[in-house]
Image (cartoon, rainbow, N blue to C red; front, side, top):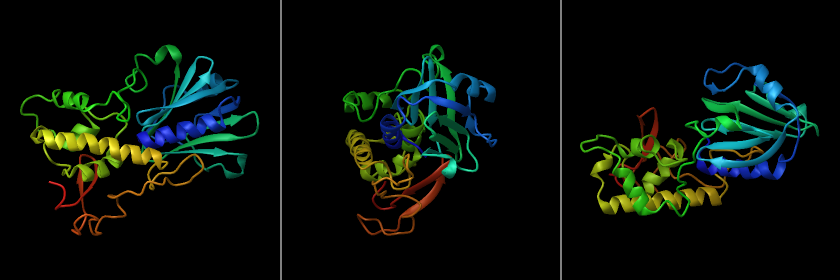
Length: 276
C-alpha cells in the first residue's frame, strides 16, 4: 500500500524521469476494477490528457499528485498500486488501470491492486475536493509538534471508545499514515493497536509522537518500506519490524512471539509483551 514514504519517493522519481515529457496518448486502463477510483469517463481521460506535458509531482499524504500542464492534475496512489515506468511497450503489464504514452516512446502505467486512485481533475476542481484539496499537516514537518499532536486527542469526545489504531489511520488520523506504516510506529511506542486512545497517558502520547517522527523519517530516508516497490520495481530499504513476514517470529526486543489479529479491516501485528 502506498503511504507517505512511498508517495514522497515516487513523486521524486517522477520529477527526475518524466517531468517535461509530452503525452502522446492516454488510456483509462484496459481492465475493469471496481476499486480503481476515477473521476471521468474513459474518453475524457484520452481527450484531456493528449498533448499535455507532465509538470511537477509531489507527495500529498498517501497520494501522488502530478501536474498535467496546462490546467489538469492527476492523483495516484492512496492504496495498493503498482506505478511503473517503461522505456518501450515490451514491459507493459497485461492489465493496467491508467496508461500514459509519451512522445519519446516511453510509458507510465498504473495497476491497481486492492484499491487505489487514478483520478483526473481540472485545476478548478482541486480546492474543494476532500482528497486532493487543502493539504494536511505532514508528520515529518516542523508543524507536527507534540502540541499539535496533543490537540488531535482533543477532537475525541469524552467517553470515545476509539482505539489508537483508529485514531491514527482514520479519525482524526495522521496524514499519510495507513495500516502499513502504523505497525512499526505502535511497536516503537509500545502500544497495542486495540488500546483506547483516550486512555493514553501524557508519557505514552509523547512516545507515540516520537515514534511517528522516527519511524517515518527512517522509512523516507531508506527509500520506502521493503514490502513496497518504487517506479523501477525496486523494494525499499526500510526493513519492517512487524509484518506478515515476521508474524510468528521472536520479537527483536523481548523474544516473545509476534502475533497477528484481524482488526479494523486489516491485519495488525504486535508483540504481546512489549505492546500494552
